[in-house]
Image (cartoon, rainbow, N blue to C red; front, side, top):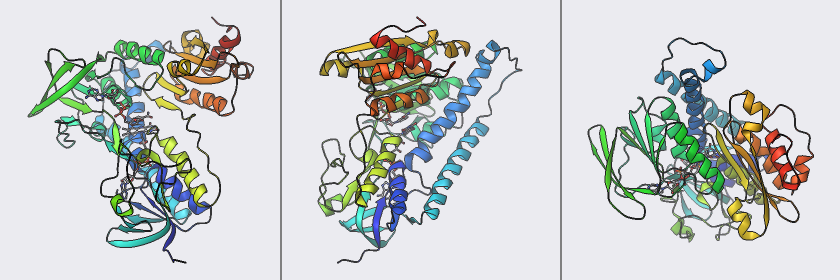
Length: 466
Ligand code: FAD
Ligand code: NAI
């Protein structure tokens, strides 16, 4: 039998890779994880989930102080000023603590961090930073990076045309930020800079924001963001961006074709999606082919078509989300160790961390209706006592259930704490709950979560509070 340096070598230390490495080590395997970045944690901890949430939280506090929210609770403030350098520093502090935390967990679990970018020599041999390392099983967890917009050059250092990484690190508040792409990144980072004082225009190719979310949620999102002062240019595409000094001039056209117009901005954020990281991995050396979208296909057990090579996270099909990558990381390690790992891809919640938050799990109403007859119930946050008391009138909870069995097929929430509320809905879907199961579960009062209970009551009967 061949002798390997490691039982498992994981390529990439994002939420998929670092979790796979730790879990495999917990299961008694000898594990190494190759990471090319200076710090562990991948996109999520370094330039994604964590820094964006740090700025969303900080900017929300700032906006509450200046936009009259504090005053509405009877809190008087003096003149409120922004110390952007300090806000950026608290973001960096969070990132440092969390990436350092993964380094600690690697040490604790005896996972070896191989520093450098890895490339396959053959299915069991990988070169990392000049050294050749062998492993019985190799997990590809290389994640994703920003999709470029043809003809548009991103220069994060110059700070005029930036991607999400540049938009997280701006050292000034733009006067006018144009966001290309009304998806998750565009709305989260657009919200950050709008709250800090920028005029923000979102240019979206489709006729609604947030593709993939429920239709009602998408319509309501447009209303809410407009009300907050964002300018929305839906059904519009950007055909070019010319930069002169610190000013960018964008050329826009209706998506369906038509007269072009120009728009000028001192900051342009390109946020039109992400694509898998596969370049330079040497996949041709092991005969691993990509699908049409450039992703690595796997079976339900995350095996690729090459024996001994597995793949998880953003590099494989499915939503590009940290928690999906993490769950796949646990599952792939369990499969490799000879156990059965489980990821239910039908129940992966999605959350947009703006104010209010937008969250969903399961089917949209549109997708559910394509499969059969459904019952739909919506309960407004305006009628939820806690949301009303907290001055948070926007949003609703929507429950979609099978018309005959009343089994819950999907839940969509817009609420200040929708990201936390959706966890209960995910559990309900995972356990195959009916709307009645949720309606008969006692929910603490006064909580936002009662809105889910009331929406569920509306499937088989009537809610109490509307
Ligand atoms: P990644 O996190 O991308 O990690 C892959 C790692 O592999 C990287 O560190 C990379 O350096 C390394 N690597 C690549 N190639 C090699 C190689 N050849 N050798 C060695 N190392 C290599 N998701 C959420 O669920 N919630 C959020 O709030 C959220 N916010 C986000 C905000 C932003 C601005 C962005 C950009 C993304 C956000 N995401 C969020 C998405 C989330 O970051 C990704 O889904 C998640 O990081 C994917 O995990 P992963 O392990 O597959 O890959
Ligand atoms: P996205 O796929 O969410 O949105 C991209 C948007 O750009 C779409 O609405 C698309 O129609 C639009 N678009 C594409 N080409 C365009 C063009 N030429 N002109 C105008 N609009 C155009 O991608 P985004 O926002 O870049 O995020 C990438 C990934 O990162 C997402 O898949 C998401 O899952 C993940 N992410 C998750 C977060 C979260 O969970 N809260 C936060 C941020 C990112």
